[in-house]
Image (cartoon, rainbow, N blue to C red; front, side, top):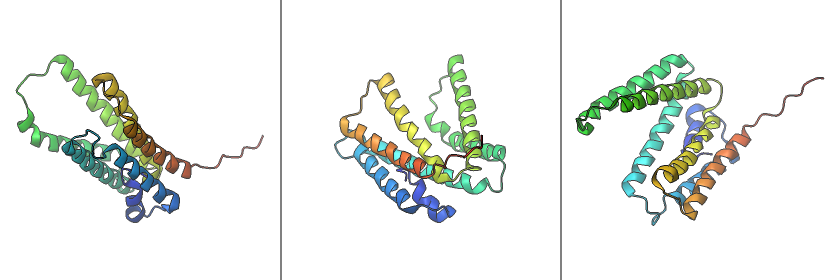
Length: 190
């Protein structure tokens, strides 16, 4: 079950078996998201809308990756992802470019972002070759923990109790799915 919608979409689109635990976890995760973005949470509506559109795009990317690993190589899929991102960002660059020349440090940061982002996509695509999409999606919940930690360290923002509860609920929904897919221990002869 995922607050990002991958589990409910993986069933009908990929033929993956969801079951009552998966659907229950999906609803539980959605409840967690509602706790985080509730009215009065102080979050900007435009920011919440952008986050939700981002979630839909991520679900689409994950589903498409899971489908294409059957016919495409891992490196080819990673290349297509990088190419699509480059084209889209190049199209919007003229409206956001400030005209400043990036410093050497900025260029190093951009290059490292490209290397680590590319490596992450390569590993995620390889993972889709070996596991159901609905099993891999709980790793997305680590983003919540990192966002909270970096928000606190960089901006001094501490989530309120209801938001923290929502984050915990979302993370627990991902744990429920991971437990559902847990494999029995391999019996070894001594």
